Image (tube, rainbow, N blue to C red):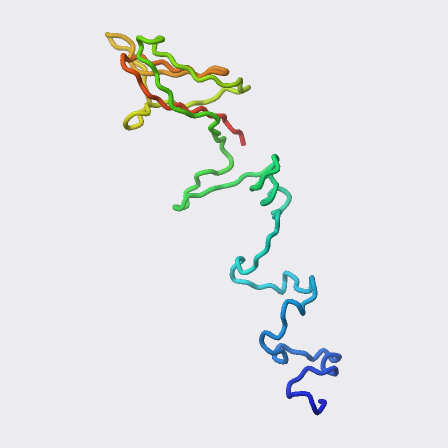
Length: 193
């Protein structure tokens, strides 16, 4: 050991003999600037939480079918894109609410409509939209008070309640009562998995 080397110093003969051990290196002595690019491999990383490693990855690829990040959606916007796969969502109770195997409904139109009394325009009001190329499903209910599904029924005094039908390009609602009714209508497109 050279005379001017402090006790425990790493000297050339130790380097050549591959005799440098962790106890020869002072705490915090090696900084990131002293580590060669690509020198730290995955098998040398051990963290208890992934949040200990940070990076702006841009796009994260999980296998061949899942992309997460900048511009991954077909329209070029950011998000999560799953190709030829499925996803599952559970609520806080651990119940599966979306399992990725059943068809889902996408809302494409919703709104409130005031239906006139049956004495005005036969109680009819309509919402027009462009032809869809598919047969939509719909939900239709009273928008006043507690939500209830309207029921059309016949009595000895005549027809009562509200009804709705959806055709290509128009949703038609009819009020059979003598007072105006505010209703909510939601139209859906079935999305097939």
